[in-house]
Length: 254
View 1 (cartoon, rainbow, N blue to C red):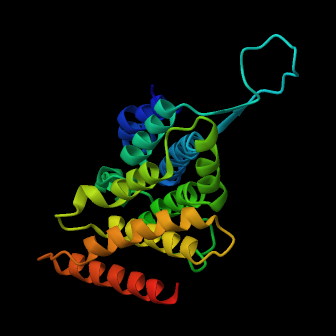
View 2 (cartoon, rainbow, N blue to C red):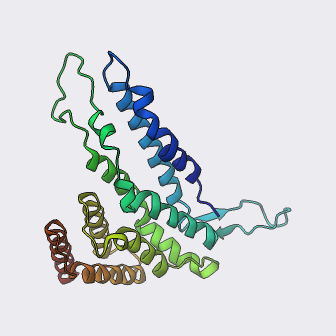
């Protein structure tokens, strides 16, 4: 199955975004319309990605009463294939290194129009890293929410076959695997640190299900192994030292 919303994301990435400069960079006009179009499209993409997260650990609800004509149970976990498709789509369109490949010319033209006042403290340059990270933070906030991990574990008892160890391994791979042996870009560094901090936060949350904490701990130890692998790239080396430091500190306090 194809994850819900993937057709819209493909349309945005392959057709609409590449046409922005042609359609909205107009003679004798500021670039505000171009900027707004970019913000609108990237915002729509974030919405579609957020919808995908709801497939993972989801439960279909049927409110028909006993005796009414239906072949559905009141509660049915989302099928494995749909959850896996959503995870694969998120891996490709939200967490892969390709997500951060931008049109440099377009980025240089995302200028706000000045209308008789300053830009307060924000500055005029587009904050691309911040915008990407806000989207990924929104997604991870749901994907690693205690209620989601608890629901995945609970639904294993009545039909869910996309189990928590596989799900968390898929998520960790989406964040770390593609550049494990390569230089890690600044955008990917931000994502990896954010993901790791969410795991640490989860591990320290005493209101979470105990067995889910065990699975999170396993993922942190896997990331710790990655952080100890050597790299010749100075930026990546510093990044891995940072990961190692915060994980080892968390393990000592939990």
